Length: 444
Ligand code: TTP
Ligand code: MG
Ligand code: MG
Image (cartoon, rainbow, N blue to C red; front, top):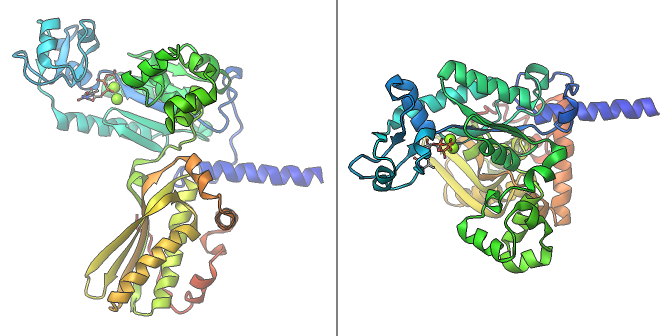
């Protein structure tokens, strides 16, 4: 019995590991990697998130490209005549108090010797692309936040590249060697902690937050390190005697609720280093969609609905695999004459449950068919307005029927992960499969 239970468990763990890995990752299908972490780093078994941010990005690029600037205070944006604002300040310029978003006139007053350079946006964008390409060598789960920073989920990539800190170090080195630029890196069990970590020891920072040490890591930090705490909120916290995250943790929950209302939950969680958002790769950040072109145009409503259900299920499955929820459902209908229409509706709450997405998609198609009876050449279904907040997901399953629908999805996904996409089909899409054999062509 024990042996069977252990094998079942191992199977589940392996399945989990494969599902956590990007679908197109070179790791999919490999045996579950055995943890090789040092003692200090033992809690990184499931979540290894990196946040990488370039140091003084625009200014660093200008310094790299013109060795004559070495050691000088460099300001990108604005001009010596005092017009405009500072986009980036080199660390040399920051010694004078110059920083991004400062009026150039003030920067000139602070450091009359500063070298002002006109921004070369296309150049920075091209370098940003090179940086991203380096990230993609290690994982396809890259979520860019701006030209100079990104989150990377490297969970489950130990087998090829080592644990989170090793990957962070490698990336830092490759960026320095190949691009001549310096990145600061934070390695942590979630996005919030990784972002705080990457900023902590800039420039040339490298900070690891072990899952065991979250409390001691956060405790001494200023509350301004909590996302959403700007100068006004910080003042309000100060009025409660709260200057540090450690002190915020001490604040009774009801006091927090009375003072900050809806935001109190967010502050309470971040003060404890809790953040369940997934890294959402850029190409998925906009829309997850599937579409199919029929070998023969279809005018039968039931057949169209069956295809739509099939497409919705594929989209739902991809959302679930990546831990993403979508709020806006859209359908695309291309008629025989190539006329194409898109209809969308934003739901009250985001979802990745096939049943929930299907109710909206079905409604949209029904309303199209009420006014347009032309036969259809292509049908597409997509979900946008994506979020990875798992807290919202819990609210969604308050209703029993939705909880059940979600359990069914999870079970079906598992079977399809093991036996292939065709292993489980929903009843109404199956009915039309024999009649309409056109391959569902999956287009992202
Ligand atoms: P940041 O990463 O915020 O700043 P930085 O890279 O210059 O410096 P560091 O990360 O080491 O603190 O922004 C990245 C680039 O975005 C920055 O080089 C210039 C541009 N930028 C602006 O144009 N305006 C701004 O207000 C900010 C903050 C950045
Ligand atoms: Mg930066
Ligand atoms: Mg940045």
